[in-house]
Image: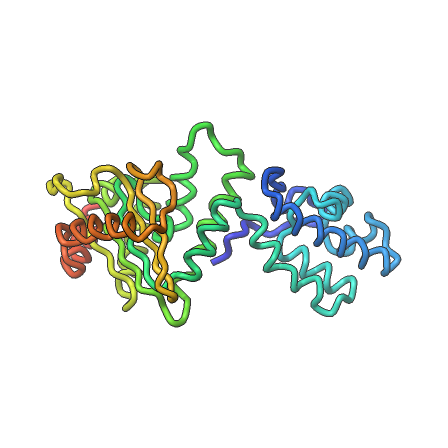
Length: 289
């Protein structure tokens, strides 16, 4: 599934993403890509307007990309590589640009998830980002206040969707999720989006490396009432975790604090419905929708 939105029209100046001025590393990557594009264009003897016309974008966007003020879409780099005869050198920058276009905080989380061999996640109010469909994520992110601009919203949705590549990794990491019943019954984005989200959960639950459990509303006396809990474990034996109501909500790697998180998650997991029961429960909710 594409997470980049719709295709671009010839001469359009809007495609791409704004550069976050507070993200120094991301801005440096975009600036480097821009300088390379300009060098290749000038070596080809093309003016910005001619180059833009050749690849289907406006002159203003060409200047923004070359000046490091706009993050180009993948198809921009593909077309530029073809027109300028770069032999794949410009297209190869798509990976670096793909990382730079996402918010720094999300990039850092995605890198941790890429390294993880095991993930434990309990969510109190919302579904974990890795489980969300594009429609669900868009609707949920749209509730933020102050409201995100359209560009910020698209960037956040794309970043969340890109993280779902964790389900396609080989060897697959072990992923355990405990979901609150309320998060399954809340029709985020409307009935159609909600149903698709429930269907997505059922699909993921069939993966051998994924375990999804449901915590019933009636089970109120568990240690997850303070908010989300997440633990990521790595192949070298290290781990990092986070909990909403302690340690200032910051990531922790201290073994003593991690033991606290794992203890709480273990209790939560024991009090939730078993995986098979949870699957049947989600199917029931879907049937009622």
